[in-house]
Image (cartoon, helix red, strand yellow):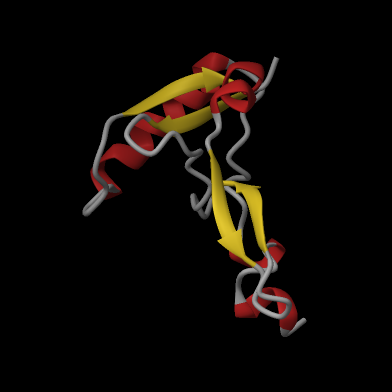
Length: 94
């Protein structure tokens, strides 16, 4: 079962780790990655914890965004990368 590292304050997955994809095959692997990441967490608020992907997917908050082109309001997962979100310029510039 895959695992992820989650910021407990925001409820979002930590996905900007340069050495990996952010998904771990074992809980032990996720905890090891978290231990390696802790010294580099300057400016990050909230606690970090390891969570199963199923549990994480059930608790990801939805946020209201505005489509940049059509100005329509829609709901999107809070952890959606900007290049995948119609609310961001990066989505439209590809």
